[in-house]
Image 1 (cartoon, rainbow, N blue to C red):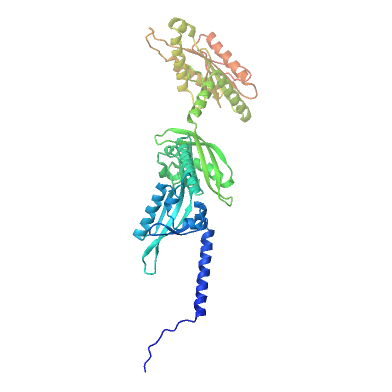
Image 2 (image 1 turned 120 degrees about the horizontal axis):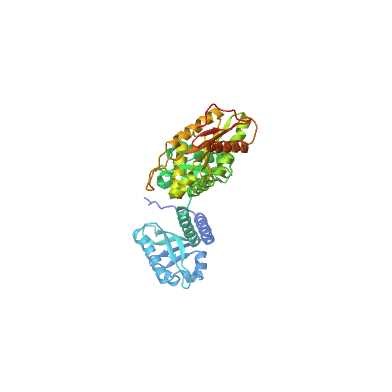
Length: 452
C-alpha cells in the first residue's frame, strides 16, 4: 500500500524560539526608532498613520492612539498637509524613493523646514500598501545657510566695491581669489587670475617686485607691508601700499596669504609735487634758493671727504630793472625763464642750477676745478648772449649776464665759496657787465681767462 508523503513540521519549540527572536528584534527596532530625534512614520494608502515614533507624538502633542489612524490634516496647517499628501502620492503612485524639503507649520506656529526621505511600503507580493518616511528638522541649518549666504553676498559686495585690491595666494604664489580691482590692475577678469602666478600676468620686473613681500610672508610667517609699483596695460605707472597677512591651517602652518593693496598713486604724486614745490622755483622751474644751498652743503661735505674740487657760479642778468620797467614784469618773467632754459641746456646732469632771487642764479658744479668752472661760465655767458626774445612788446630783447666764479679746494665752508662767487659776479658788473670774473683768494687759483 502506497502512502502519500507528508511534510514534516518543525517541532513547536523551534517556532516559538523564532517568534520570540522576531519579537525581540521588533522591540529593538521600535526602541531605536523611538530614540531617534528624527520623525519616523508609516502611512497606509489613504494617508492615515499606521506607525509614528515617539518624536512624532511629541511633535503633535498627542498620545499614540490619537496619531494612529489620523492623517496630516489633523496636525498640520491645510497648505502644509496638502504638500505632504502630494509628496506621499508621488511615492505611492510612482513607486519611487523621494528626497525633498518640506516647509510645514502646525496651526499657530512658525513654518519649519524638514528634510524628508520617503519610500513605498510593499507587501509580500510586491504590491504598494503605503509609504514610510523619516523627516529631519533642518530649520536651524537652513537659517544658518541663509545667514551665511547673506553674509557671503555682503562680503562679496564689500570686496568688489572697496577701494582696494584684495587677493589670496597659495604657497606656490598662485591666485586663489582676486576681486575686480585686483584683476583690473593686470588687465584681466577675476576668473583669469585664479591658478596663475604674477609671472604669467605682468612683466618680469613687476613680478619680481611683487614677489619680495610674498616671500617674506611665507619665510617669516608674519604680516608684511610695503610699497609696490605696477604698470597698467596702458603703460601708466601706479604706486600701491600693500599689506599681506599669513593664513594658517588647523596645524598652524602658513598655507596662503591674504593681500590688501591700496592705490596711493595720487597721494604719491601729490607728495612729489609738494616736494617739487618745496625745492623748485615756481617761475623758472629750476631749484629755489633753499634747495640749491642744501645741495651745495651736501656736495661740499662730499668734496671735503674725498678731496674733490667743487665750484660755484653766480649769474646776474644785466640791466634787468630796465627790462621790467620798460616792458613790464610779465616780459621780465619771460626773460628769466629764457635765461634759466639756456643754462639748463648748457649744463651737465650732475650740475645744479638754482634761482637765488630776483634776476640772480646760482650754479653748483661738483667735481669741477677753477679752470673747468671758468670754461663753463664762459659757455653760459656766450649762450645767453645769443638769446633774442621777440614778442608783441615791440623791440627785441637781448639779455646779457655777468658771471662770478669761485671754487672750493681743501677745507672751508660752503658759505665762503658762495660769498667769493657773489663778489666775483659784482666785480664782473663793475668791469663792464656781460663777462665772467673768477674769484681770487687763498682757496682759488687765478685763471688765465681775461675779464671781458
